[in-house]
Length: 286
Ligand code: PMP
Image (cartoon, rainbow, N blue to C red; front, side, top):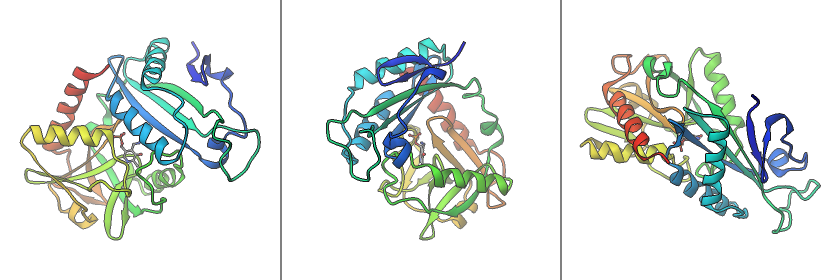
């Protein structure tokens, strides 16, 4: 069975889905996206992703052509049609196309392009990365300055993943002015005693939907949370480190630039937060 995707109002087999070569997402990376995970056939934190999407569109003065309800219906329809149990739904909205290439935005009534597709991930919960922990390297953060907007400009994060791979690691943490900003596709944390430390929200990082949920669960579990910058050296000397994202949930980090963090094994705080996150997400998924 070929995967059914959604393009501008139609559900189609993936081979039949087409967008214009003049689409600004393709020519200018003029688009935003969201990734919502699916557990037991239900969407995790759909509201959070919908709210962030609205904000990304607003910040880029892109038209809001779809209501939250429309988007929820499309997400659910794709999950059902593709029989996704555990996996994700990818959504992208671009500024569309007026049939040519120009730096200036097209006329305000130009329809945006809406594309969604699913990925099945049977190992989403019992992931090998969660068992083993990730090795990360640190790299300079060379992205643009509006990382709070979830745009499809993902070339530098892709380069970061390739740099990590070349160094025999799994991922990279990006560093700016001596402090860790975030992972290539996740938020970064360290643990010292009973305190969880993660960078404060600003335009320097993506405001992770998983981050918000995990910090709430951590506070409910009587852990202390400090939202502040930290250096690579502080992270290497921490008791534990971990990352969060919609598709990795909470995943431990066991090595930074070749130095073991804590025992060099996945830590108990990260393990506990991962269990709580998955359990609570299952309860409220829609
Ligand atoms: N930071 C970056 C740079 C990301 O790309 C992502 C995931 N897309 C995250 C953080 C985590 O965000 P979320 O928890 O909403 O998936």
